[in-house]
Image (tube, rainbow, N blue to C red; front, side, top):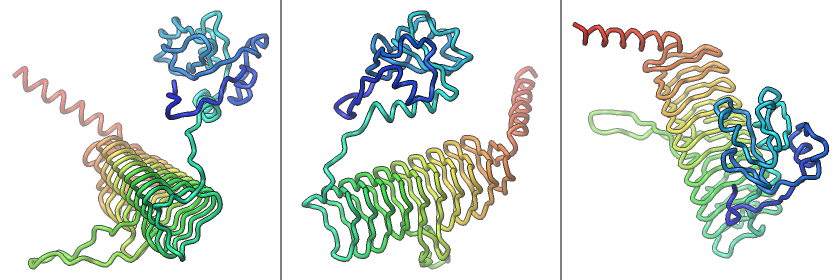
Length: 341
């Protein structure tokens, strides 16, 4: 249940309205005018609540379901108890997303520039924007329409931010061209110097980092993630990417569309990712690696060679998943035989 201190509840909704929102079919049309007020997890849902049932692990829990209504699949429909109004959706996860967006909303600040914010005279601020307390918008910044800039945000000189972007409190953006509908979470650092040095016996001399960061449309960069600008070429994050908390993307990387980089993933410089690549938690990728479209890297996988299109790898060094499992099985057999001897 959403806490109304943090989210506004726009319900109730009739089951007829829920069916329309979720692109679902209400099994018993006579229940169309019954209302639901909250979305809750199945075990906690009661009278006036709606739940979602699409995980086979919840089959036993479904027997005790006490919600007023449940959105489920054709497969699980027979498991919904009598007395619970059932709605059938082809994609119940998408149905949940749509109903959640309709029912709950974060309170939005009044669209204004806070008195303590510092906005340079040469900055261009779009229509209907909010800029929070103590934020700094430097010279030459272009901020699109309908943007939300939190408190203590810094957008450094020359950056261009698209329409409907949200940059949460404490984030810093420099040397960046950002598309529309991006969401930068608190503490994220975008556009800092890449980690480039000439190493020598008398010390390490910094290489100038004169590239940019290019973020596509609908990119999310979560809390305390870091995306470095390029040394000479740009660092590019494609449309629709999701960059989780504490991820590091080094200079000159080119990340394709729809990639998912899960928490604590580290990608060294000048890597190239195809579209829809997934890096699970704590994956590491060495520099100048090419990873093909649709490839997946398992948790804590260490990538030291190019990965072909669609391949799933795991382990350090990362190898195809079946090979990795065979290696583990072989080690377990060796360990067991050693104990017996």
